[in-house]
Amino acid sequence: MEEKEFISNLLNPQTQNSAFEKLVSDYKRPLYNHIRNIVLNHDDANDVLQNTFIKVFKNLNNFKGESKLYSWIYRIATNESITFIKQKAKLTGFLESDLKIKIVENLESDTYFDGNEIQIKLQKAILTLPEKQQIVFKMRYFEEIKYDEMSSILGTSVGALKSSYHHAVKKIENLMNKD
Image (cartoon, rainbow, N blue to C red; front, side, top):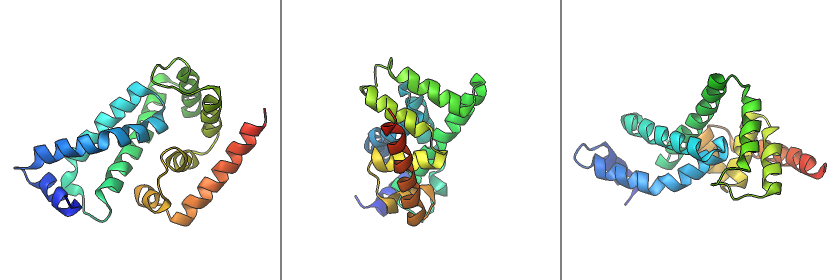
C-alpha cells in the first residue's frame, strides 16, 4: 500500500483502527529497538514505545506529510525517549548523566540484554558524548539509519550529522583504546 493511501486510511474514521493496528504491527519492533538504544532499559523502552504510539494516534491529524510517516514517527519516538530520561532523572533525583551510568551498570543484570563486557564498555563510552552525538551515533551505528533519513527525523542537516557522527566515533575510539 502506498504511503498516501495508508495515511488516508489512518485519518479515515472507518478504516482508522485497522490501519493503526497495521502501523503498530509494522513499527513496534524497529521503534522498540530505536527507543531501547536511547533509554537502554527494556521496561522503560516498552513504556516509551507505548507512549509513542499513543502520541502518534492522538496527533495523526497534525501529520502534514512534509516528511515520510516513518520519519515523523521516529521523531516522536526520539523526543519521547529524551523526555522520558529527563523525567526519570528528575523523579529519582539523579543528574541525567548519573542516571545513564546507573542504567548501563544495570545492563549486566538485565535479562533482555545479551551483550558482553565490551558492549557495556561501549555503552559507557557513548554516555560520555553530548546528547545529540549519542543519538546520532546510536542511530547510525546500531540501527544503520541513513543520514538523509536521520536528517528528516532529527531536523538537522546531513553535513552536521556526518560531523557529529565522525566526532562521536573519534571520542569513542579514544575511550575504548585507553584500556
